[in-house]
Structures are given as C-alpha cells and as structure tokens.
Image 1 (tube, rainbow, N blue to C red):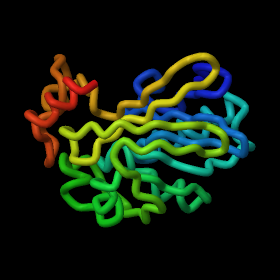
Image 2: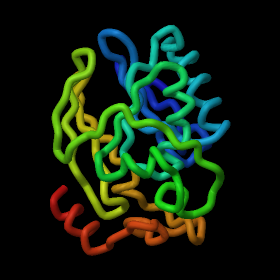
Image 3: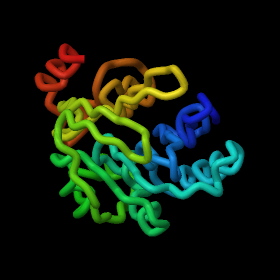
Image 4: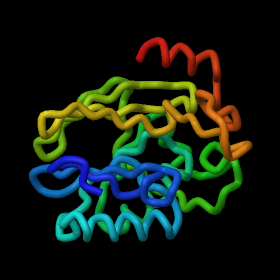
Length: 196
C-alpha cells in the first residue's frame, strides 16, 4: 500500500497481519523497517512490492525496531535474498541466537539471523541518500528503537511496539505496552514515553 511516492506499507494491520513492515525507496533500492514473521507476512511483502511497482528494486537493508519474532522473524529470509540486517545493539544478540528473548510468547519458530550492523542508541545514518535518525526507546525490550526520517515533504517515525496498544493476552482492549514481553520494564517504558 503506497503511502507516499517513496514509502509503502508492505504488511500490517491494514493488510491482515499484526506487524507493520515499511519500505522506503532510496537511490539504489529499498530499506525495509521490520520484517514481520511467517508465510503470511512474506506473502504480503512480495505482493505489496509487486502492486506498488517496487518488485524490481533490491531490498538492500532491513532496520529492525527490536528483536521480537513478529518484527524480526523474516530477517533470515530477507538476508538470504541479499539484504543487510541492522538491529539495535542491545537486541542484536537475541536476533542472532533466538530463544525466549525473541520468541517470548511462543508464537512459532524463529530462525536466528546474523546481524550485519549493530545500531547505537540515538544514531544517525544515511542509506542511499535516505537519512535516518534513531531514537533509543527501551522498555518493551532493552533495545527498542524508533526510526525517524523525512521524505516527500512528510516526517515519519516507525515505532515498532514502543507505541503498542493491542493487548495480546485478551485480544482486545487498549493499554500502553505489552506486559508479556520477557524484558518489559514498565518504569523504563514510562520514561521512554516521557522522552518522546
């Protein structure tokens, strides 16, 4: 689903999966923010790339907002297709090893993935002319990170689960944060919200 000329939503609530995956077009390909997990997200990603006229462009980089499998579960698949995987440094070991820190609610299997670059808190970087500013936002996980960027005259900030409102435990209701996360620290999370 094309949001602007350079930004597309490839998977997410509007496309029948729970996790958002964004594509940002740059000078020589695409940056994805998060990967979703499982076959449904992979299908949405491929179909959305085709529908938005982006299928011929390589996915050069994947920026993970945090390590949980619903955001990083397709990282190994995308890396096998040539993408570099970038992850917040505090969560990178989880992506590389898997285990309860990544799959803490037992939703499925997770294929560990090499992280090509560990992103420092509040780091700025440029990929193919697209400038990103990260905002370290711990609480949901120790490494939770927002990716902020400007394109097409608009400002964007991909938040991962930092602004998560659906309560998985009940499937309904609204509340900030997800208390079931292995590393959830509500005090730290509230400090992050104050910072934002």
